[in-house]
Length: 100
Length: 186
Image (cartoon, each protein chain N blue to C red):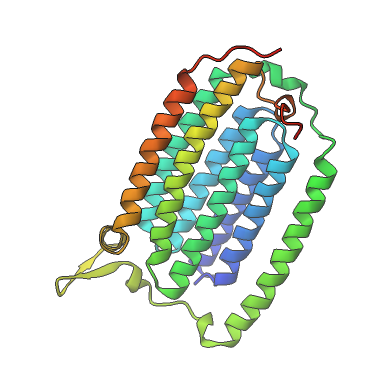
C-alpha cells in the first residue's frame, strides 16, 4: 500500500521540475514540454486523492485536464510553427516585440 | 517492502529521470523522448492508484497524440539553428532559486498537512472497490472504465460537452494558425 504522502511528494517534485524547465529553457518546444510535465503533476495529485478518498470525481477531473492539455499542445505547437515562419527561430528571446 | 511500494519507487524514479531529461537535454528530440518516458511512467502510477481508464487515456492521448504532435513540430522547424542556444542561460541561476523556493514552500505545506492527515483517520486509504465499480439501475457493474464513464455522462454531462466544443475550437484554431502565411518582419 503506497501512502498518500509519496504521491504528493513525487507530484511536487515533478511540478517544480516543470517550473524550472519553463524558466531555464529558451527553446519554445522544450518550454511547452515542461508545461506538459506540470499538467502531469496535477493529474498525479488528482489521482492520488481520488484513490485516498475513494472518490471518482478526481479521475473525472483528470480526464478534463488531459482534454485541456491536448488543446493547449495543439494550439501551442501551431503558434510555434507560426512564429517559426515569421522569425525563422523558435527561441523565446527572439520573440520580444512586446519587450517581455 | 511490498510489491506495490517497490513498483511505486521504480516508476517514480523513471518519472523523475524523464523530467530531468526534459529540462537538461539540449536537443528538443531528446527532450521529447525523455518526456515520453515520463508520460509512460505516470501512466503506470495511474494504474497503481486504481485508475486503469485514466492510464489508458494517458497513453493514448499523451504518449500517442501529443507526442506525435511534438515530434512533427520538431521535424518542421529547423533544429540545427537551435544549437546556438547557450546551455547555461543567464536566467538559469534565478530559475533554480525560484524552483528551490517553490519546492521548500510547497514541501513545507505538504509535510504539515500529511502529519495532520496521519493524525486523523483520513490517513487510511479508502476501499479501492469504490473506484472499480458503479451501481447502475440497482445492479453493480464492475470496472473502472464503466465507473468513470457513468460519472462522466451523468454528473459531468455539461462539462463534457463544453470540453468537446473546446477541442473543436482548438482544432479550428490550430488549422487557422498553421495555414495562415504571415508577412516577414525585419
